[in-house]
Length: 366
Image 1: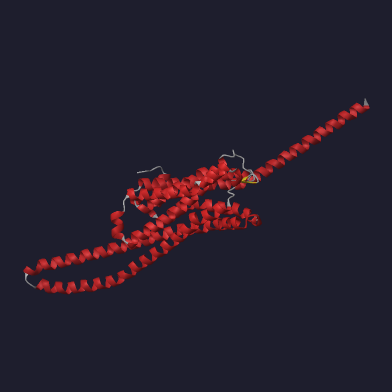
Image 2 (image 1 turned 90 degrees about the horizontal axis):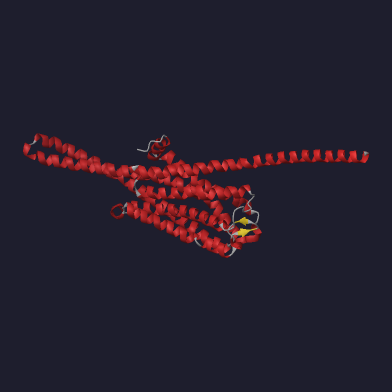
């Protein structure tokens, strides 16, 4: 009986210790989960603002007649790509982080997720490249551009940009469905085809980036040349107007038969002055727009270059650069943040977007 009682006491103490350790272990798990969820909460905030901000941009271009031009149509399409990053790419990446980069979803979704990720980042750089080309052509040959430009042609250009992006990204799901090792490395969903990474990075990012930078530089140079030519024209106009004023005094003392000629010259001078002022105003507007787009280009460059450069380095050295994979996990989120930055830039530097966003947040759409 004593032995039996001792056994019961021993079992009770084991149960108490087991429950004690189990409760402590559960508390430790909860504490770790809470600690791990702080980055997740931050990522959720980024995702929300990315989706909401780009929806505001799309609504603004749709409703505001002042924004109905080729550049803003491109920016609207760019906002669609950034919004889809927030809807389809960021949440899956967040789930991937919570599971310590071990793919928790069905394996068939891995190549599709990589495809969407590459598609939207490619579409972003292609849109910015197309904006640079379109603006340079428009400023370099404004008359020819105004004749050939229309909303239909702008939409055709946007469709072309999306088509190129889809074609460049389409080999990823094809490779992934044929061979799972192309998209899985130790249970992690990541593109594992060095040749495609190298070629795709140069075709989809570095070459369009060079075109974008060159076109932006040429655009600024043309705008500078046009604006520097106008002070000379202003001086010529001031001399001409002063000469016309002296002629006016003479004509006022002359017979009334010469008055129609005077009025004709005065109207010609005033129309020329209005034309020059209109051109200067247009150049200043283009310069302000170029500054805003320059900020967009610069931030996109700064946020995506580390990812693509590291991606190329990993593809070249392969197994010898495993330590760079941790940097890739950071750089890819820096690139995602660029999808939510553009609406903030438009709000800060463009009055039309700023006023539109203020009204839309108050549910005033007209």
